[in-house]
Length: 462
Image (cartoon, rainbow, N blue to C red):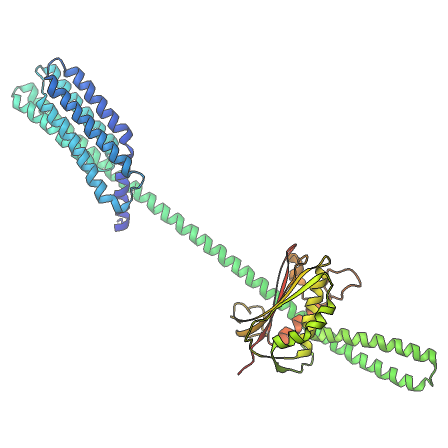
């Protein structure tokens, strides 16, 4: 059972089908009327005959103009109006042919049978091209055929009575055939609508499935990255802690050896070299502990705008002369609770990376702001909670990074720089400091365009 919206759409398609047949129906109607007039011209009044032809032409032209006006904009909202126009046009044409057959009824059985043949052909043609809309078909067949049958009956002769009966039977057969075609057309259109709906439903379901699979893959990749970073952090932290303990033993023994050296310059020189190596090892373990979120933080309530303004001279010394440093500090920035020293170190690490990415120079922008991060933003960061954050974004115009590099950029000792020009611990330290401070780190980069590193630190409680 078709729903009301479907029924309205089916009826609209019926009218559309009738209108689409107009290029065939109207010329054929006019041609048949002219040919009929030529055949009947010797036995029927010329004036009435050609007046009838003129009326056929006028009505056909009017129907053509209406068809041209409404076919392109035909929709369900205009259905009732266009259905009425279609029925009225068909009824007018049927009356012209039916009344014409009676008013112009010729003498002689040959011409009378010719009229019957013409009316039958017009009815059959109407049924074949307009059967999608039963009312349009019936509006022509009945007015066209019944007056002729009545005229046959009025003559009273037996052959003409039989012709009248045959005309009525033929009209009835055409009506039944039209009804069947009308129903078949409706069923076909309903089936098309049902298939179209099913196709759209399948397409929508497929789109949802692809979106869900994409989200699942994204979530799995995010979880995998978080687990990988967590595992690297545990491993790195454990190794760094144990290595730091060993370094303390080494430096303690070096101090004892120095006391026993009796100012021997060769021994003191060796001790100093060993102490410098131990200090470098200590700095290395400090970086590893920072990544593993195990460094000691001395937090204070600070305003990041003030820290950046104090730190700007040092940043200027750290970058190349060809690089233009620009700051955009948001007014009224709320305070954070962070370690100022480690915050400075994090900013310096990012700025140095930006400097190295712009060997030809460019602009380096440091901008602050306030934002809110939701759980979805922090899905890969178990160290931060949704809420208000102060952001510090560092944007460069450097070479940028590919997707493969971005996936590993926070890993300790991973670097794209030449040997000796980078340890691969700079962004690892920034990552560890940000997470240990309860914040979040986001990095966006495009090859050939540049990189933007954004540090989010939670707003201090009032």
